[in-house]
Structure formats: C-alpha cells, structure tokens
Image 1 (cartoon, one colour):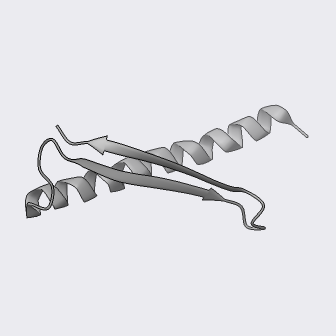
Image 2 (cartoon, rainbow, N blue to C red):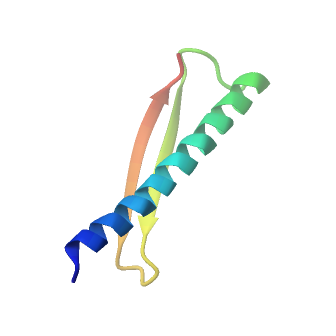
Length: 68
C-alpha cells in the first residue's frame, strides 16, 4: 500500500468534511440565533459520525459549542 497516497486521500476527504461541516454548523447557529431559539451564553451540542460502507468503521465525536 502506498502510505503517502493514502495520507493524501484521507486529507482530501477530511478537508471536504471540515469545510462543509463548518459551513453547515455556522448556518444552523445563525438561523437559530435569528429565530431567537438560542441566545448568547447558551451551549449547542453537536456530533459527527464517521462510518464505512461495510459497517466496520463506526466513530462518533460529540462536542458542545458555547455561543458568545
């Protein structure tokens, strides 16, 4: 296996995930803030799930974002 190529492919995937995820989270928070559903000082819980097509890879990350 070409480790360098694997690293490049994973980094391309993560870059796409990172950029699109940040955009989606920002849009969601702005919408909720505009609607008055969230306020400064509140916390929003978000999660990201990573899985493989065969189901053997299953990884979740959970985090709380404080609105300032």
